[in-house]
Length: 346
Image (tube, rainbow, N blue to C red):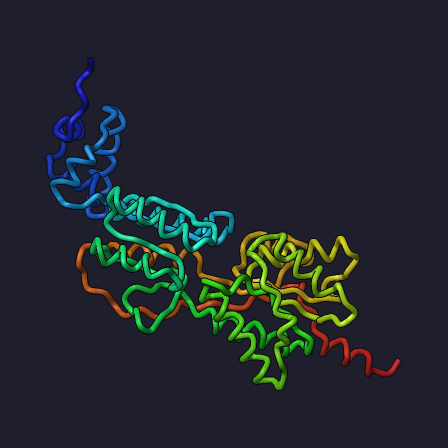
């Protein structure tokens, strides 16, 4: 049986010191590119695999981060996970990803199973988690980052943007385009502070313009295509209908557009629809979607950098909410322009 290659074998073949070979595998960002390339070639040629268990025993670290997301279906999380993973690789860490499918009880079980196997830190989404989640973190003494969130009480742990601010600006834009009958499909509020912030922000924006967000026009539905379809089906099941529907995600908004197409409801002439996230599909659907552009990749990168800094005890700079921007496309109709044109003499 062929002996397993050792780190000494890698160093010898690459023509570098044992320390350089070790750093190339542990902290590649700290190694010269030519040295890193030689070590990587030697690793590939020898089929070398590090002994993770021995490394963990020696350093008391697994060099692994647990990242638990609400879902893996939404493209914004897929993009963010890719950025998180790539950044962690560059910092010498691996990532273990899991999803609880928006079931809080499952999140606790997932986290417990992962933590008991051994990780150095945790990345979660949002701040609304069961007490048992935070108890596990304290019990194991694990650093954690709350991504896609802002929370003044946890300034060192949060990496995200203000959902309240983004919702206010989107609702303000819809009102500025002349809409007074506005419905909201924000997601499901229970167990999700980001959805509650969307509702609060939308309500505040409408109130600032002398309007009211009707309770029967807050249609809580899952972040799925079917969720958006269902919202349109409910809102257009009566003759008392909105002129605009603000969706919590682009996925919901695309589903809403699909339901309008199937029902013969013209978008945006009969119903304007907006989304949030600015996924690639938002620019491909017809009509193209007005939405909130979210710094998805930046959230992943900064979450990775922050969790590693927390693990390694490095000084942390001030965390500020990331910025979102409104992206105007054809799915939002300007009723002011329509009214202006109708007043022009023939």
